[in-house]
Amino acid sequence: MKHEVPEDLLMAYSTFSKIVFKSFDYSRTELPKTSALILVFMKRHSQTRAQMSEIENKSGFIKSTLTAATDVLVKAGYVKRYRTDEDRRAVFIELTEKGNEKAGEIEKSMREYVNEKLSVLSDEQFEKLLDAFSTIKETVNILQNFER
Image (cartoon, rainbow, N blue to C red):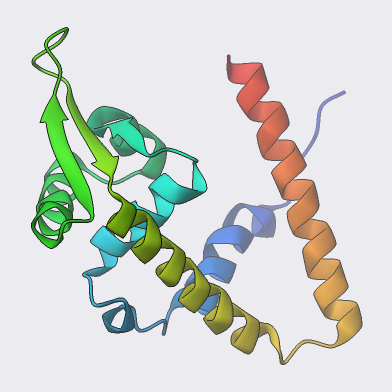
């Protein structure tokens, strides 16, 4: 069965994300936006250790941006950067305990912000939004398994 995707669906997630996070004040994280997002990305993907190229591929950050943001995290003691003897070209970063805690703080701040933004929705609208995101998560899982 061939499925037709409505034109407005292609931009719906991007638009939603921009509207919801547009005015999030990353300065409250005490980190630049990209550095904060890297910490959250690693925590959300249950990765205390990840190869830089893997983060680049999965997060969409370009290498130079990722490197600069990681420099900030290393200096702050939130991650360690290292190479292994098996492959000296591969660069890994690892969340420190301090980094894991900071990621949790950032997630909490973001969640509180989103809850505040979405408080304008009625209970019915909020439930519909949760149902839609549940469906999106299921679809993402199906597509990820299909790609393997």
